[in-house]
Structure formats: structure tokens, C-alpha cells
Image 1 (cartoon, rainbow, N blue to C red):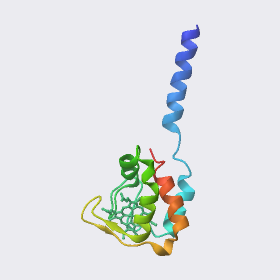
Image 2 (cartoon, rainbow, N blue to C red):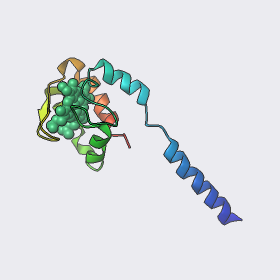
Image 3 (cartoon, rainbow, N blue to C red):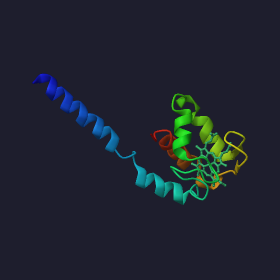
Image 4 (cartoon, rainbow, N blue to C red):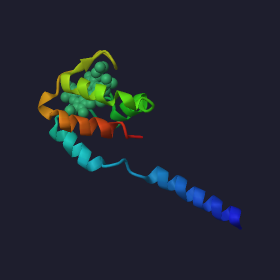
Length: 108
Ligand code: HEC
């Protein structure tokens, strides 16, 4: 009986994890849109820039790079993903960029 309850609760937990939506998706996409990121980025698809889920996957175990990424987005960067260049995003504001990069790294 006990084992069965355990199994059921485990199943439930796995399902909950699967179904859990990405944190703050709607608000963050609005901020990204207002910051003009979505001209070149999508969460799931590679556009001009890499898909943000791919960015999250690459740096998953390297959270210490967060501030470096903030700088790259702010000042622009190239050569880390392919041939395309990310132009500087100074108008988005460093604080917004910090919020967005932090969120991008939480994507599953
Ligand atoms: C003009 C198109 C463009 C815009 C606008 C843009 N990006 Fe990018 N982004 C790119 C490209 C291209 C790359 C890959 C650059 C490289 O290879 O180093 C990239 C890379 C990144 C990366 C990964 C950086 C790395 O070093 O691995 C992050 C995070 C990112 N962008 C976030 C943002 C955010 C947040 C915004 C909005 C404030 C934004 N981008 C706006 C084109 C863009």
C-alpha cells in the first residue's frame, strides 16, 4: 500500500515538473519585445540569434558567466554562436538586460 502511494506521488511530481510553465514567460517576453530583442531572438527557434533555450542549455552549469553575458548583450558580441553579430543593445538599458539574461538562464 505504502509503495503504491509513493509511486503515485512520484508520478504526480514528474507530471507537475513536465507541465510547469517556464517562469514568468509572459512578462519576460513583453520586456524582451520592448527591449527589441525579439527582432533577432525567439525562445525556441534560432533566428538571427540563437534560441534562448539553447543559450540556457549551453550555460546551465556555468551560472558564473551571467554578468559576462549581460555585458555581451549590452555592448554587442560575435563569434560565440556562428557568423551573425549581435549589435549593441544599449537602448534596452543594462538593468533590463540583467533581468532578461537572468531569466534566459532559467529556461529549461
Ligand atoms: C541584431 C540582432 C540581435 C538583437 C537585437 C539581440 N540579439 Fe542577442 N544575439 C544575437 C546574435 C547574432 C547572437 C550570437 C552572437 C555570437 O555569436 O557571439 C546573440 C547572442 C545572445 C546571447 C548569448 C550570448 C553569448 O555570448 O553566448 C544572449 C543571452 C542574447 N543574445 C540575449 C539578447 C537580449 C536579452 C537581447 C535584447 C536586449 C538581444 N539578445 C538582442 C542577435 C541579436
